[in-house]
Image (cartoon, rainbow, N blue to C red; front, top):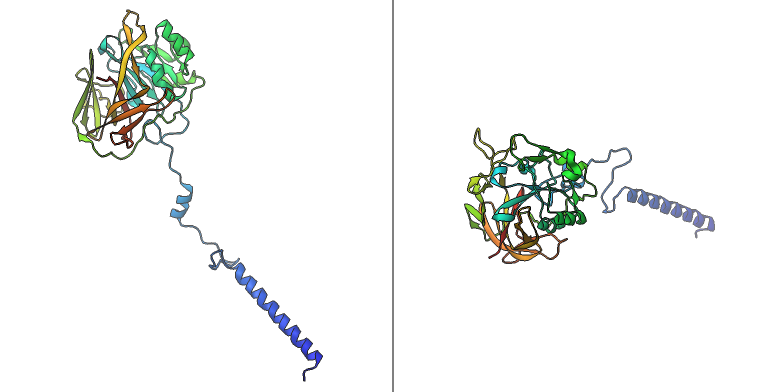
Length: 354
């Protein structure tokens, strides 16, 4: 027989054994991760993550411009500049730094340029000329940009000052302008974009205006050149050297900008774009006229229509749509897919629909 004392001693021994087992189990559990794998002891250094794994966690892609698809510092303001484009005003200055260049119809069947800057600012831009009523509709999609111009019809000027743009004309930012002695007036007024923006208030940063950048869409037709004709002016583009070289009225459109490619030795560099958009719009009569009494054309950029996009040596036919003045302009293929642009400077020619 086993007496009571012996049973009590056996129970104590069993209890002690249970405690030891529980302690060992607890130690083992503390030494494993959530997935059951062994963790290092307190005396062993923790393994460092591999450089590639660390980079994957900490590296984020740089912000890109909604106007060019290229990397850019965030929060940069938007500046639109009206640039003269008659023969006496050529070659222009500063256009190689523009994100977007619009070609617009003006009086007499001629063209004028609206250059949009945000990613980069040249030291000088010009010759600066007057604004038009249709500029305000076109710029609404950019939010509240600054607008540089050298004058306007009195009624148009009132519209500009009531519109969501910040005027930086010689009337409000005179110190940012200068006259060139090498040209005759009125084709000799130039502006310093950085100084213009220093004088601007309430200007918004670059935002989505509908452009999409990416691989070449299917369905493009190989194209060496394309020309848009106004009644008294032409704008042409020729695919060469991986870009669309610009010509005005049958002559290469050169620039006074230094440090850019595209020209032969001892020649001025030629303007060139990564993407060209020929946007067919309704061109009607504005409510206003120029100083000579000529009625200003009004290019309607709200609505929808057809477009041709030139990129990578091909022409792609598609459509554009802009449902309201504050909305961006989207471009799609005939099949309805996004019509993506090549990254870089974009030229948009507003052509009258037939």
